[in-house]
Image (cartoon, rainbow, N blue to C red; front, top):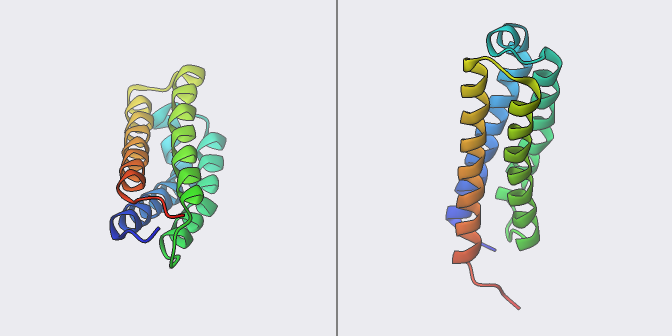
Length: 126
């Protein structure tokens, strides 16, 4: 696939993921009590976003992006949204915690949807 729209969506996803990851790693000590979420959860989630950021950046810069790699990105984003729901149910965060987790889930869901739109726009090549 060679879609400028998809490249921009993947790169935006990478930038937001990287920023969120750094914020969770660096700010875990301050965020944990405010969000009523375990500090370790924030740190682990933040570190998990680092290779994800690199993978999305790499994918966005490929000459031809493999459809299956883009589908995998969509699947991982959907898994993050589902995981966010589990976090809300399992940890019972504060009001700010709910807002933080829901905002991330919505952003990730939007990225997944935009990636799906890009996949549908681009005809499959034999």
